[in-house]
Length: 274
Ligand code: 13P
Ligand code: ZN
Image (cartoon, rainbow, N blue to C red; front, side, top):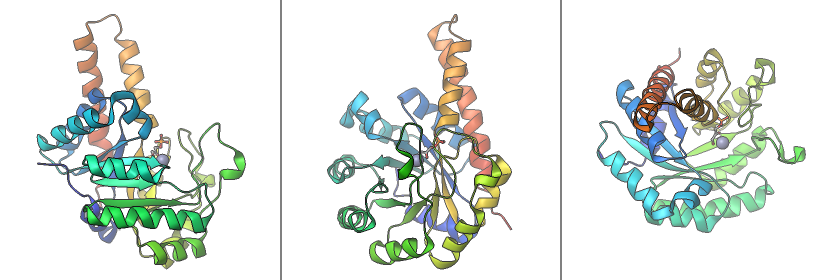
């Protein structure tokens, strides 16, 4: 199979109240383990890469390698550009063969976010690429606190009416790289957004969110679940625990552990909720 535009897969998930898992990878060995996990679960997955990771390994080289990984896989794989803040970088990824992109204008005012998102929408539509945007801001450590804003229902409605993105990342209390308590999750807000705006929603900062809460969120339109930190933590743990072994053996243990994690998480999310 080749890498695919995942928009129809995400839409099917939205219609049937389940989600596609999107895994952040920093290296090829992680990407290979993630693909194996998706194959074990026999469900489509997205591999997500950031601009920093592309800068680290080389845009062309890494993209071509992950595309060829997708071509040899047994499941549909979307190759997704995660949290890209520069329109020109989104265009570059599309030119190289990414099948899905996130333009992240979440720290801009809404008019500029819409303006830039529309540029991405135009270009992505020409190239049959899925588009994700973010409204409200899912925070991470080290950022100014004033950036953190929960997504407003009215703004989400206006944003979608003006851009018609394929899916929308919403800020509903999760945080990148950090466990949050259940009472921080704004179930009220996501329910209202889901009622008013007919677009598949994306959960960012999903690491540390217990599985029962993830499943509950699937009934409120969450159709793409982004997972980074849990995967990276497992990667480090496996390699550190096996550092006295041969690299091949340590990497093989890491690969099996990540595969099992991805298998379990992808299966869980792929079950429709009632
Ligand atoms: P976590 O690192 O918290 O899983 O978040 C991942 C993410 O949102 C990537 O866009
Ligand atoms: Zn994110």
